[in-house]
Amino acid sequence: MYCRAMSRTVTLTHTAALSRLGYALADDTRSRILLALREAPAYPSDLADRIGVSRQVMSNQLACLRGCGLVDVAPEGRRASYRLADPALGSALDDLLKLVLVVDPECCSGTECTCV
Image (tube, rainbow, N blue to C red; front, side, top):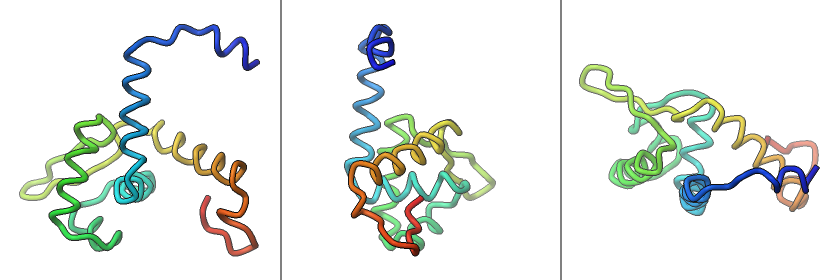
């Protein structure tokens, strides 16, 4: 199965998209934003409060995630909410979390694990 998957054509577009995702996930705040948005769309001020960062930091990180093509903004009157650009990204993040637990089982051990 691994060999068959490797036979698929990988283009520069694929590698650029994967690099953008890696860049986004490399920052703890951006990762936390993406994980929060997999649950539901949210307003920047609510995200900032939930994650524990300033609104300026949140604004900068959301701009980065928009630039990476990972989140979309939905204007709602004077406010705007953010959501994952594609619902499949939420599933992919869930799968990545499960993989992290396989690679590093100490990440979340015991019955009180809420990682997944």
